Length: 376
Image (tube, rainbow, N blue to C red; front, side):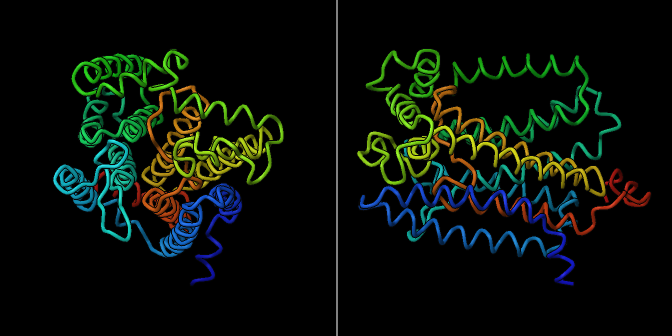
């Protein structure tokens, strides 16, 4: 049995992910002899081991129970309640109350909420794909994303809010929406953004958007992070300065080089060639995820796999775009590379669930499809 499960794991996906993980670890290690470098590196190694263990354990579990409506409602309401608790018990870090501090480790629940949102939307659209052209389903599905979106914005965690919106919009688009509905979605997005601008965005978040339009306008304040990041990326040139010779991170000009700006720190040491290689590896990871999604036995598995791909693409586009000065600085981790256990555990847990679906990936039987639409 175990041998069959192991054969179901997409080892090509693992092969593409491991160099990205290694690149993150090497970048953190290169900060030495900075005092905190060894701490970041050692803890991240531990989180990588734990996350990979979760990935393989999850690959052995039959997760078809996640298709049950009662299970998904319980998970969604539980995570929503946890996000509420952040306002009472959460820890403020970098201006956002997004973490639970347990002393020996911190936990960011919004990472798990993103995964649960993918599951909820996969269930919703898989049961209604025949009638998806009805515009009401855009707004009903939007409610599932709107609730965690508002809670995350109030923390405020603008980066995670962008990814939540990205997940919802991406899954709406792949669910079979009409061109008219596409137009309505963009119009609704414009209304939401306008409302958030006047009623939700904090002054520093507005400043970041202003800085996105003209990053050089205030490089001493709102534009400082992106200015230092673009310097780091540009100074890497073609082949980089070499491992351990990244002056922007070693001299502490580059903020949080182990997390939000690890791509810039890596680019400074490995140059365009190294950065391009990382982006190619990410593209291959997305390809393998979508390939596994195409093997899904029902629409739920297919949509879940596509949602996981959108989840990763959202993080990659926002983080790399932020490091290159193409999008506002939002503070969001780069998958598999950035320091931190919460996002790493969530990423490998999501992939573990995806791998478990390969065990029963086959053309859907008539009874399976009937149960899918009846919500059994």
